Image (cartoon, rainbow, N blue to C red; front, side, top):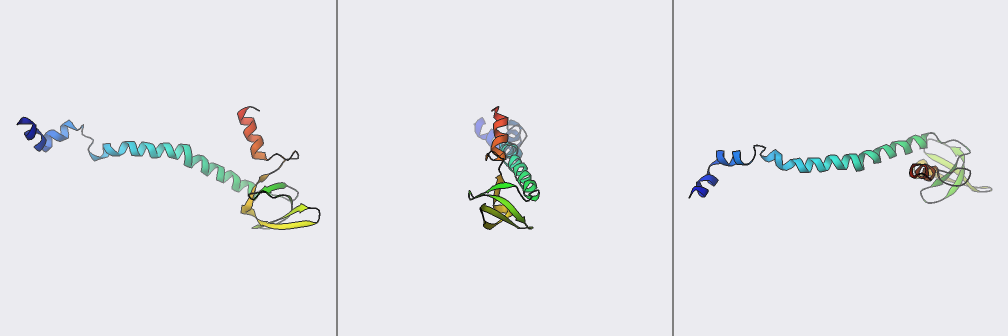
Length: 121
């Protein structure tokens, strides 16, 4: 009979629970959110900021590649549109947001080169 009396006593149940109450149940959820923030969200925001800085620093003569895989040299720039020469005498206009990265003289994207340096290659 003491088990039933113990379960019915709210003071004894709170003392046995450790005193954290409902907040204690949310601690693992909060920790998971913090880990996701530092491992997923923050690096993605940093990468987006770097890409935005790259797009604002574009100049004529840069060799770039679009997100669709089109390679070309910048021949004209406006605030929203970039004119690319994809072949001799062939120019297309693309949105600045469609540019994935710059190419070096060797034709390797800058982002791939920096990854190779990080890895040790």
